[in-house]
Length: 606
Image (cartoon, rainbow, N blue to C red):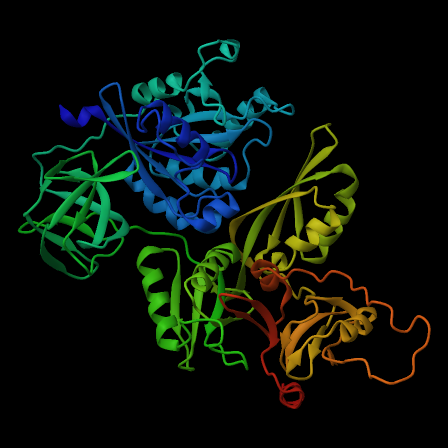
C-alpha cells in the first residue's frame, strides 16, 4: 500500500544539541539539493531571530525521499517556552528522534520534550550527538537517558529504544561505537533505522476524511493555508469538506492542495492518509480544527497545551518620542498584530484591559514574550511593555505560584555563591552531582518570580562560565516575599541630548546605560544608581565656558563604556514602576509616570 512508503518523524532535543544541524545533513545526503546548489547552514532556521540566536523557535516541516520512501520530518523547538509548538507538532508524527549531547546529557528541556513524545505513544530513536567532543561521556549519557525513560514511566516497548551515535556537524552516524573509525562515514545508518523502527501511518485512504490542523501558513496567491497530517481518508482539489470548529461545522471547498518535497511546497491534486498536506480554501481556519467529511463529520480531539505562567502589559507608546521611530504606533495596529499572533501561537493568551490602549499578554516564559516583542519591533511597531509578572492561582483555597526546576552546570568555586543566591530566592536544592571534572551540576526547585532578573546576575557571579536551564515544575503554595532589585535608578530630569561632561560627573553615582549624544527625556532611566533609591539627574549638563584657562582643566573626558541594555536584560532589570519603550531603532527604559511630582503623589497614595 502507498501509505506504507511514508514515515512521519519529529526531531526533539534540548536547545543547542544539534537538531537543525542533523536535519541539514539528512537533507544533503538524501539528494534533496542539487550537487551545485548553494545552501545556507541550519537551513531549517528560516527566521532571522532563529539564525541570530542559534535556536529553533517555530516548528517546521520538510520531507526527504530515501530508497523509495517519503520521510516527513518536523524540526521542533528545544526551549520549554515554545512548548506549544512541540505539543501540537507531535500530533503529526508516528515516531521521534531524541537528540542528546554526548557531554551535557539529558537537560530539563530534554525531559520536557521526551515526556510529551512518550505521552503521545511515539516510538523513540535515541541519537547521541557530538561524540567527538573531548569531554564526551557517552556511556554515562546513555545510562542517564535510560534512567530518564524509566523516570517518565515509558512503556516497555518505548524503553527498548535503538541508539545511534553521531557527529551531525560532520554528517555521519554509526549504530555501534566500534565502527566510528570507518572510512565511509554517512548518515545511512540513521536513514535505515528510521525506516526499520518508525511505524508506517495507520490511516486508510478509503475511510472518512480526518485531518487535525496543527499549523497555519499563508500564500500570496491562495491566502491562508491549513497544515496537518491526513489521519484517515483522501482529500482532493475541488472537494467540499467540513471544518469542525469548537462549536460548529463549516463547509468549504478545497481550492488548492500542497505537499512537502524537501523545503518546498509542491502542488498536488490529492493527498491520501498518512501524508502531511497543506490545504487552501478557508480564511477562518484555526489550529486545532479538524477537516472532515462534510456530511458525516468526525472531529478529532483539539490540541491542548499547558497554561501560560507569565504575563506582561503591552501598551501604546505615550512618551515624548512617540511616533518618531516606528510606523505602527496605534492601539488598533498593536491589537491586530497580537490577534494575528494568537492564530499561530497556541500557547499565547491575550485579554483587553480597562484602558483602551493596553493589552495583557500571557505566555509560557520570558523568552517567548521577548521573541514576540522583538518580532514586533522589527515590523515597525512602537510600544511600551511592563515587567513580566507570574500568574498566581488559587488551588483548593490556597494561594499558589508557578515553580521552576532549575539545573546549573558550574565550576566548583561557584557552588557557594549560586547556592546562596538561590536561597535568597526561596530555592530548594533537590540534587547535587559532582562529575569529578571540575564542574558540578546543581538542581533546585525555585519560584518562577525568583528567576526574573537572575540570569544576568548568574552570568556575572560565575564569570560567564556557568550554564543555567529551567523548566516549568507545576504550582506550589506561595513561598513568601522575595527581595527584588537592590539598586535604584538614575532618572533624567529634562529633555535633551546626553553630554560627555555630564555623564563623566555622574559616573561615581552609578553605572550608565547610555553614552554621549543620546536623546533623553524627563523620566527616562539612563543608569543604575549605586544606592537603593532613585536619583533624578541632569545628563545634559555642559561645562561652563570662561575666558580663563588653567593647566589640566581641558583634558579630554574619558567615559566608562555604558551597559548595553538588550530587551531581555531590560525585562529582567525593571521594576513595577518602570516600563520598556520598544521601537525599531531603540530600547529605552523609563518611569511609568514621567513627571517626578506625579511619582511622589503616587507613592503617597499607595
